[in-house]
Amino acid sequence: MTLVNANGASIPSLGFGTFRMEAADTERMVSHVLKQGCRHIDTAQIYGNEAAVGQGIKASAIPRPDVFLTTKVWVANYGRDAFLASVDESLKKLQTDYVDLLLLHWPNTAVSLEEQIAALNDVAKAGKARHIGVSNFNTTLMKEAARLSRLPLANNQVEYHPYLDQRPVITTARELGMSITAYYAMADGKVLGDLALQAIAAAHQRSVAQIVLRWIVQQGFVTLSKTVSEVRAAENAAIFDFELSADDMLAIATIAHTNGRIVSPDGLAPEWDVLG
Ligand SMILES: NC(=O)c1ccc[n+]([C@@H]2O[C@H](COP(=O)([O-])OP(=O)(O)OC[C@H]3O[C@@H](n4cnc5c(N)ncnc54)[C@H](OP(=O)(O)O)[C@@H]3O)[C@@H](O)[C@H]2O)c1
Image (cartoon, rainbow, N blue to C red; front, side, top):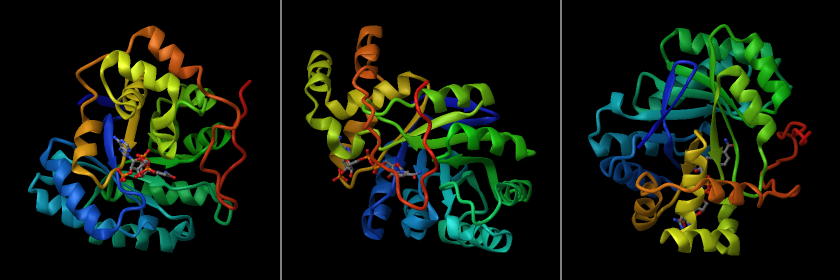
């Protein structure tokens, strides 16, 4: 396991995601992966499974300080009072006094970004979030959020996989000292049938899932992966004992195409950056 350091945060580079997971699966898998050595769990208010994540962490018996725990404030809670109350509710469900990283889940204009960022900062100042950041922000919003924030922003969590070129967001994150966390690394399963990726996987005697997760981590980013299977969780965790060559890295980067984005919900998605 490696760490990604950004603006004061040290984030384990492989996190276990819990999106689209029922409570029972969440509790079972969170406990399981922690016992197997994972130290980074990702959830969100909107996933409806923070209580199961809390139970899973407790059941693992791994000390809370050893776990890097992220949750995300949902857009309906961006008004100041709702924001603060929702974070308290999240902490109660997670059975903890703090999260390691608290993110704004999507951009939203119903409440000013200034108010959202002020609430995020105040939660951190109160000791309820060790680090703060954003998710699904484009480069303009990243710069604006960083300008408005008294505390440094540690992370932007975005869709990232071999079909989606995220160079604008990556460049801006570097300029701002922020880390990038990749979600949908497997492009919602699409990478698994990719012939070019299968060839690289065969050459390394690895699975396509491992190649894709390794490709993200080897670039210095954090990646998330979710599974309800103990076998697939073990497979996804075994990405720190091999290296992709420079040619492999480049070959995977060239798979991206202009229609590669999968997650762009109406009413939430910002105007995405276009490649210059
Ligand atoms: N910030 C955001 O807006 C946002 C949006 C989406 C996701 N996320 C975060 O990112 C995490 C990852 O995204 P995700 O859960 O949708 O996608 P993912 O990790 O890319 O996984 C996609 C699917 O691939 C399957 N899978 C996992 N490992 C596999 C393997 N080794 N071989 C074959 N199939 C495998 C899983 O199904 P099985 O469970 O059946 O194995 C899973 O449903 C989420 O859980 C969430 O924490 C954040």
